[in-house]
Length: 532
Image 1 (tube, rainbow, N blue to C red):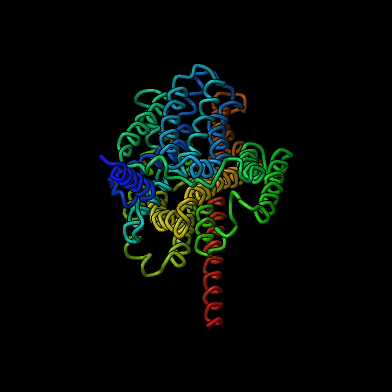
Image 2: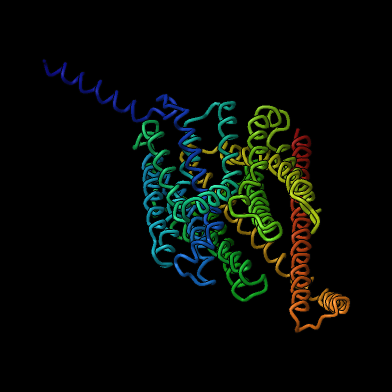
């Protein structure tokens, strides 16, 4: 071989290598079905862990000897790590690439789940749950980015994100069902071991269809806008922790006010920093697109409604009807089925006609209607008359909102920033869920206490009248039974009244959010007409 031939061969080889490196993932024809299944399994695993532990918590507490104050941290630890680091996860996805981020996230989540399931003490369990949240914060934006770079054609993209969004909507409810089943049939530890199976399946299915390792934003570094990254993560962490304090104490407690104020200050400083930063971690231009901003806002509100409803209804089923953990999860199946039945047709029929600008407020309005149905519950209500129709309407509302937010929230974003856009959606859902739980739990607690105080004298009078009819003294067995029965009835009525009021409050919030979105859409349309 002559030197000229060798030189030509070298040039052809280098050219081929460069072409391979520059070829987008979509053009390398990955197994799209494998990508979708892998991403959906990952999303299910992440969202599932927000609730799967909650229903297994009593058994976990007894087994590990946890105190009442320690138990909530098994849920809070995961939420804090997830919500506080999801923005960092988006940055990391851009720096190291989707492939490495996805692999590290799945393997790490699986190992952390194994450690949590094998925990023999509360400190070990807490550390493992925090580790789960950290790896979940990496997986959430990465799995969405994987779909963004794989599915670029509009129709195909909308169908895929309909499935992905439906998974995000039903994951919390599925967590209750799966957690209840595994706890009742095996052990609370299997509520954590199940993640190992999901992570392994997602990794094996998607392994050969992931983007190349060199497909990443070569211009980004972890140290870029480090102060902005710290402020953004700090704002998310403070918000989630403050909302948790509101749930555990009250909205006016010193810890709640302090952490929420700190989160607000950090968020304000973050915005100012990003405005002046040369390489911002969150370019404010990403929020300038109205539909994208509406998607982020809707994700927050829908997340609040979803988690608030699930927590309220779980309490209602267990405390009022005496349902087991498994049965409490089973009753949510109509919502899951309605969500699945709505998500894909909505993407094919409703969204093309109304667009995201019309579909998002419609979904919020349907969710408001579901909460109005829930607000009709009384002590005489049955599952079939109130909870069942409300859950069906609720599933339809989630089917209209979740897929659209995931799709519109990342559409039009540069490929190198899809992880960041996905991180914003995940953070909005997480913080919104914490807000919904804190708001409705604190409302229920306060109003139940007020109801008991307001009706205490009436119950005492009823007790005295009942003992007179029974010719029983308060200290007698019959008298004590009468008093205890009336007290239980009072507490039950107080809880139901509080739940009903909380559902009404959330209905007004959802209706207000839908109205604001409609008004903003009309305002934008009028502005465009004037410019023409």
